[in-house]
Amino acid sequence: MALTTNPQVWKILSVVFIIMALILGVLFYFKDIFVTLLLGVCLIFITCKLRTLYHHVFRRRLPDGWFKTFILIVIVVASLSAMYWLVDHTVTEIQDVMYITTQDFSDDATLLDVYSARIAQFIPSKVEAVVFTSENLAKMKSFFLKELGSSIPILTKQLLTALLIVPLLFYLYFRRGKRLLQRFYLSIPKKFSRSVKCTVVDASRELNDYFTGKLIQSAVIALICVIGFSISGVKAWLFFGLLAGILNIIPFIGPLLGAIPPLFIALLDPSGSVALGVLVTVVVAQLVDNFYLQPFMLSSRVKLDPLLAILLVLAFAKLFGALGMILAIPIYSVFKITLRELYSELILVYGKH
Image 1 (cartoon, helix red, strand yellow):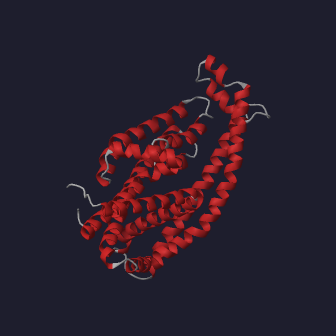
Image 2 (cartoon, rainbow, N blue to C red):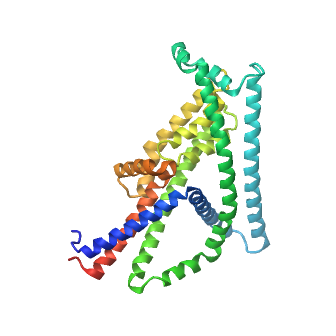
Image 3 (tube, one colour):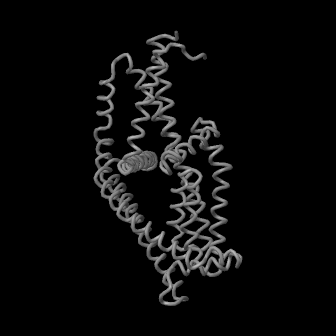
């Protein structure tokens, strides 16, 4: 179908596009608040999926009354207990392996000295002499300490912000979500109400399909990594496997980020077999992801040309960093659906010529 030549249509579309781009820029400018909002939305999305799963598995099969409430309470308490155990067990195992490893070195040896000694046996001596000099090791130590020191206040601030905003988002969505959406529809002029409703419905459906696919993708990657890390003998294998699945959401660099923490722990083992097992596991997970999950599962849920997807991810990475890489395709979907529905409505109002 040929595009319209009516200048009024393109003027309005351009204005709307600029407004949406400005809103997007403001959100990324206030990145801390934006990340907290995204965290709340993700938690709401996962909660809705779990509620749907509970409805299909338990609610239809259990009689109404106190027993159903008791089962729900047991599930919630068991989930929170499992999360606490996971964190506590992970911290304990990492502390143990670091303590045992440092016993082979002098009392004043740092963890960086341990890593340099472990890695030195896997690289040529000439490379070691150039890379692992005392000056370079001092710079690396200073860099890691600086980054660690600067990240703690940021994480603390992010946590406090989340504790304030996320519960409010849950309340607004589950208690007043439908009422707020109805008020929003009523505030729209009647001649645009149909178009706005179609935009909201289509965008919601496409975003739901995309994030459902990403959730399944992360779950499969996490399962592969949990099994592989467990067989390899990595300490805290359950935590690192789940972390690899979560970080896999970030295109391109996510798999690398997911492999670094277990690899650091595996390198503390002097044999090198644990580190090799971690590398094999990550490679297998990425082969499954790149040759099955993305081309067959995600492509069926998100109708987007692969080349365009790569260009979008690279462009958003340049503009907004890792967060932009994660949100590139969802933002594109919202822009596409909004401008498409607005274009159709403007054609009806102003005509094609």
